[in-house]
Image 1 (cartoon, rainbow, N blue to C red):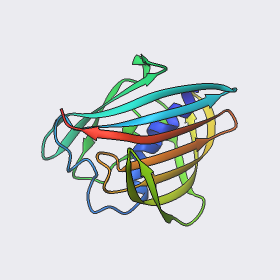
Image 2 (image 1 turned 135 degrees about the vertical axis):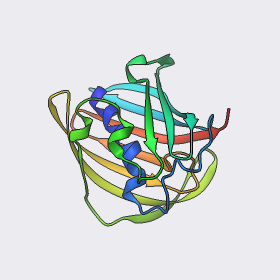
Image 3 (image 1 turned 180 degrees about the vertical axis):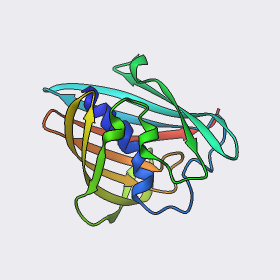
Image 4 (image 1 turned 30 degrees about the vertical axis):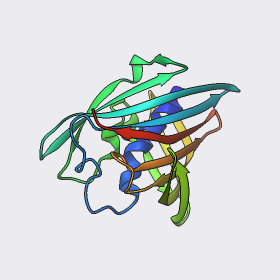
Length: 183
């Protein structure tokens, strides 16, 4: 389960790089802005539901600090709480999203040509780019491989992520944009 959540955080960061964007998606954010994602995951036939919240804790013209908080089955999971600094002058670095050791060894390869789709999340329809990828990583010394499908839209705040599905032999996870706001 932990490996799948690491993959999700990694892909959340990398989703903005997978599609050509004019600027870092966090450049438009303000301090206090947040985006929340519903998470459904299952490992060994054990389902879990949760939420991931990204919050801009501080921002200058050059960088933004992003806090990530994960709640599973109503319990905040401090093992996944982290704050990441994003350099706004550069394309968003996917390895910066994880803040977890070993995730920097991850490799993402597109499996097929990108497509587009209109999907409804958080009560609104979004035009999205859709990409299917294979991710291989070494997390905590173990090899990990998964297939990842990502829907992104520039209309969605912070990481531009509308929806993501991650599948591996050990587990599956769906992460869906649930809403956003400001402090």
